[in-house]
Image 1 (cartoon, rainbow, N blue to C red):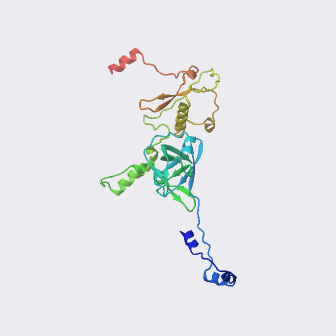
Image 2 (cartoon, rainbow, N blue to C red):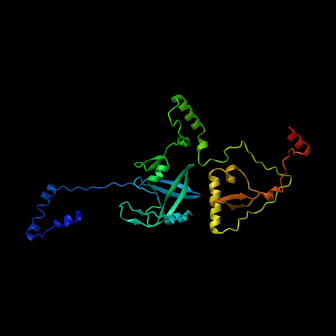
Image 3 (cartoon, helix red, strand yellow):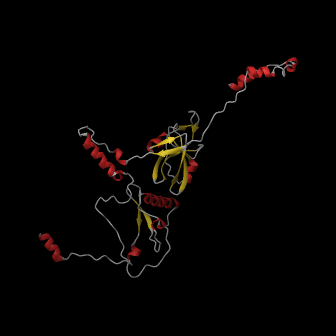
Length: 301
């Protein structure tokens, strides 16, 4: 519209008017001073995180009502894409986006986990667009002026509601909350390792005088999809502390045991490692074995 108005104000000029143009130039500028207006723009805040061993960048958009990821980026991350009947539009509300499906990913940054659930679309400007649902699920404060996201301290025990009926005294209620904060890790949905449900449990291998010979690792004869699933299972167990890299704990690898997947009744997979070969070189732990006489005495008591 601004351009149309400017064009409509142009009229035919006579030659005599052109002669007086130089003389009236200063008067025209005095009446209509020249002004230059600029609109400041800044880059959207973002988070550099990792998905497995793949570096990714999540662009934060506090005005987006949903999370979205470009289809090519989802394919690069080997993300599992499921069908979706949802639709998505650009910020103008009229330009549609081609929805391929939806996916759920867990990114990591500085030992923090960032949960992402969003639509997989074709025509997206950025690889990953993290909107309001991502910001609500990832507690923190986004400082747009500094283009950074500040991670707020959130306790897992905050989800536990104490004294719903308001019957406890304030002092007793505060003691309960203090106890929950003390054992906050118990309420972590991704508990690191064993939770001690049946007491202390330690596993040690008592090796014999003969060491097993070195051998190369063997990869199961799986399809590409199954190999990707196997790697994802390893990454998942590594994130919760079940597995460690040898260089992280100062171990030199001498013997490798094969690992493979066992399908569960619910459709998921269990990772199993075969220690049968190395078991031939280990010594049994000395223990007291019950005999018939001790068993009868135990029953009689």
